[in-house]
Length: 71
Image 1 (cartoon, helix red, strand yellow):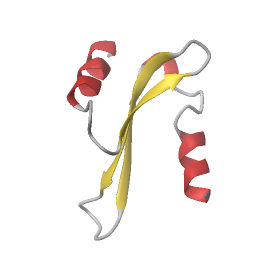
Image 2 (cartoon, helix red, strand yellow):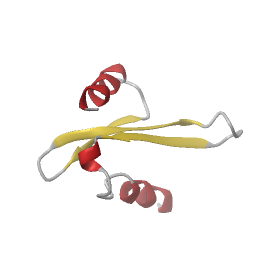
Image 3 (tube, one colour):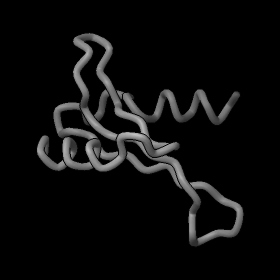
């Protein structure tokens, strides 16, 4: 899985709407978060994320997404 995350990150080095998810405790990359158009619904956006299994269940994605949506 780590290789897949690294490959995805390498594919999006300068893409607007793509970010590396970094664990702040040790500054280690743990995944990729993207936002882009949701082609299923006109005018909607889709948030996508891929995380290493070691980062699952720790709120690394849902807390920042919920914070941003409430701003």
